[in-house]
Image (cartoon, rainbow, N blue to C red):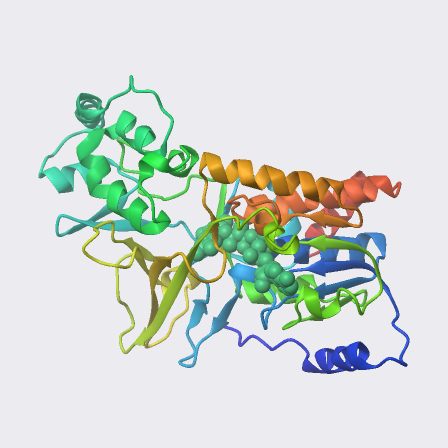
Length: 410
Ligand SMILES: Cc1cc2nc3c(=O)[nH]c(=O)nc-3n(C[C@H](O)[C@H](O)[C@H](O)COP(=O)(O)OP(=O)(O)OC[C@H]3O[C@@H](n4cnc5c(N)ncnc54)[C@H](O)[C@@H]3O)c2cc1C
């Protein structure tokens, strides 16, 4: 496993000087991009490399990569600082794009849930049902077992309805009720149906968490991929730099803002609610801690929702192992937009305000108050880039052809 190099400190030093000096003329940028996660970094890369734009990319954190940031901890084990990030997509375009900056290691995600003193696969599958109930059903019998418990005729409005309609009250209570309450701080009956609709139920032996065509991890980690992405002479990247630090002191033609949209507008309509997480990282003096990368703990009797062991994801060989307990909380960094009807209404007010504000474009998970997976944010950023390119009269087909040729050459 490669040791990740820190981002160039000299650039930051130069930039601080630039900000504080009244006499030094500022070069000026075509774009100020706020946030160096997937949304900001993909746009910076595209605008710099394809349209020859000068980009100032900033992040208030001390690193690139946003929530997907990974690094070696003090013991030398690769961890994901903001919780496990598993890459999966069906989008060929996203895969082609990212493959310019990384090689991949195959990885299919599997999750166990600690229920009734056992660890069983989640999403629920044939093994889950047979293990929990001490049965030996085949797929057809499992389908009948679920059908006898499901309530398919109920009106599906909430996340609770989705699950009960498919598997009935008992399995809902075992796997979803406590987990959802801990994760979101509210009952599943108050949450948009989209949250649990993402979790399938199976009656076969497939125990993969995702079924996407591409399931893999960047072979040298996400941070390495991001560093390659933004390594371009047209991009200046400054960590530990907030939008407030540069907005009035730097010349730029347009802002692309991937931070929270409500924060940009000073929470003028009130705060958009987010769910946050507290991560407790620890390193153990053993090569292996648990059977899968993630084990969920749905019971309300334990405070954490899941434990992740990173070596399953990274394939790293190391005599020690590192794990993370996740504790959901309402305080802290904004991680998950809370999908309730009231919050959707509040977001629409900010969206309208954003539409009336010139010189700035909001994008990414926080800029558009939507839970997106990484591949969806990459797709969103490539689409936004496509619109900018078209407005400048540059054919996106040319850009796509360029990506393809880069891929072929890699
Ligand atoms: C715990 C967790 C697990 C996840 N697991 C997965 C997974 O397994 N698979 C998957 O596909 N997706 C996963 N995701 C989703 C994934 O993290 C997002 O899709 C992705 O990070 C979104 O990228 P982004 O650039 O929109 O936002 P972010 O990654 O949040 O980046 C936004 C950046 O903007 C910066 N910023 C904000 N405001 C300012 C400001 N005023 N000035 C300067 N900088 C600012 C922030 O510091 C941040 O670094 C997970 C998310 C979480 C929270």
